[in-house]
Amino acid sequence: MGTFKIGKFKKRKIKIGKLLVYICMLILVAFTSLPLIAMINRAFMPLEELYLYPPRIFVKNPTFQNFSELFTALNASVIPFTRYVFNSLITTLATVFLTILVCSMGAFALVKYKPDGSKAIFSFILMALMFSSHVTQIPNYMVINKLGLINSYWSLIIPKIAVAYNFFLMKQFSEQIPDALLEAARIDGTNEFQLFWKIAMPLLRPAWSTLAVFSFVSNWNDYFSPLIYISRQAMQTLPIALQTLSGGAGVVARTGAVAAATFVTTLPTIIVFTIMKGRVMKTMAHSGIKA
Amino acid sequence: MFSLVRERVKYMAVTGVKRRFETGKPLNISINLKNWWKRNRMGYLFLTPFLSLFTLFTVIPVLVAIGLSLTNYNMLQIPKFVSINNYRLLLLDDDVFLVALKNTLVFSVITGPLGFMMSFFVAWVINQLKFKGFFSLAFYAPSLTSGIAMSIIWLIIFSGDRYGYINNFLINIGLIAEPILWTKDAKYIMPVVIIISVWMSMGTGFLVFLAGFQNIDNDLYEAAKIDGIKSKFQELWYITFPMMKPQLLFGAINSIVNSFGVFDIASAVAGMPSPNYAAHTIVAHLYDYAFIRFNMGYASAIAVILFIMTYSLGQICMRLFKSND
Image 1 (cartoon, each protein chain N blue to C red):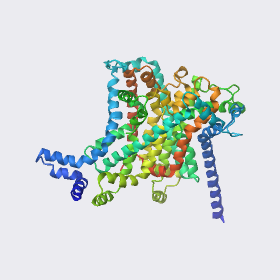
Image 2: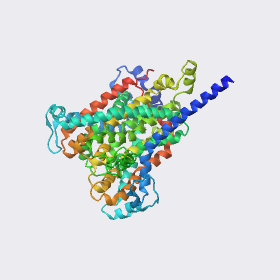
Image 3: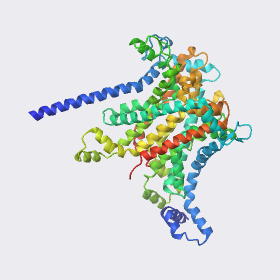
Image 4: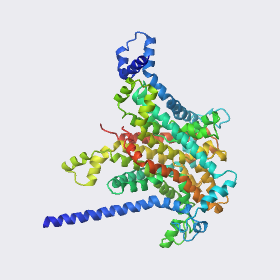
């Protein structure tokens, strides 16, 4: 009897504790997601709701009015908004593809062929993880300038292919490819390029799809590179276009378009992540640095 | 023909480094060179694209930045060597830089450790809850967003008139009578930038930590229970922390680099230059001198100081989270 009571008491105590944890977490979730919820709702608000007092978070009469303003009304202006979306898409996708190819190839070679000097190369890469990209920005600008790539898509792509972090991630994974498998394929007459493309790459799929997500997110949102490399408005990417749209004269008239543009800028990264979430989680488990 | 190739490849792959020491006697330099090339050819070939881009855009730029920091260079004339003059100006005479340095340090001390610890703690809690998927998406989503896009929303939230969500809320519950100019008043700018940055940066570490928990063998916890570990916090201290060191190190380095690189949120929220330089950061100062005034030498000195700071902090973290095995 006595023990039964104690057991029950303990159970209730744990339950209350758990409940408190859930409540705290929900408050934190409110902090992290309310701005996003407000952003999504504002994109669908008709203008009069955007100017309502007191301000509302949730939309009452959702419309696509803001989107049509963004894509049709603004399209009549000098540079259509779709142009920025296109610029962002093409540079981001090219960067993602090239960084995956170049970093996987390098990491695979470093781990599986172990050419002389691989240790030194890897320690340089670890070192590069430790400083922000701003440090190299000035010389990079000079290089891009010398190559005549200012105001071109290439200026947003080339400097961001050989990224230390991406290489690091691929290296962690390449180590898990069993040597025996590669050896067996060699005996079957597979050449080294096929070995990389047909055997290593499929095995590394979780790693490079994670890399694709991260690379997509960081390049899609990159603000500094277009700010310094691109001065022609027609070549700008979404973050800068959004800033131009939201700031400057005539802000009031464009509130609706800005709300829609914010939504358009944010949505792709969230979709990409949601689709790839499971794979990303599996990969990230191996991303630690052993010092 | 094929067998020949296969033999060679096999030789390269299997014997690798070992062979070098066995046959490494200086019989004939050209044969040694040939062997060396045979052994390393594929490796170097595959590494070439990465290494050439990495050298061009990372290794050389760091060296060039260090070199340029000792000169006056405006991109038109030849750099003029001025020794450590830039550093002397920067650290002794440039009051705005000192403000930027102070702002960045305040910002980093708060967002770095705070964001780091919060994301670890939240990941630890979420790992033990139901609806893991929902919670992790809710926490990670902000770090997927663009700083510029979200600062537009945050500017509405922190708007200085009654239409701002925060002002409206605070007036409604009676805490303030007049709306506060959150993003114009120098007093409030930094806290606002910090809140937005913590909101945006919690995710990166969070994801690494959450994934790291899945690496820890459950048997360890079972064994620890038998050994007398009672509370969840003891578990955290004696098992989870030591097992998570590689992830913790990764998260720490990430948060250092990010917090010292703060720029886009600060400039989007407070403008550039911000009122009374309240949100002026090292990177904002760098951007100002490099790409507005085109004083590349001076800007490079700023970059070098940024490099030294993040690199030495990174080294400290390496020591702190050294894996013992």
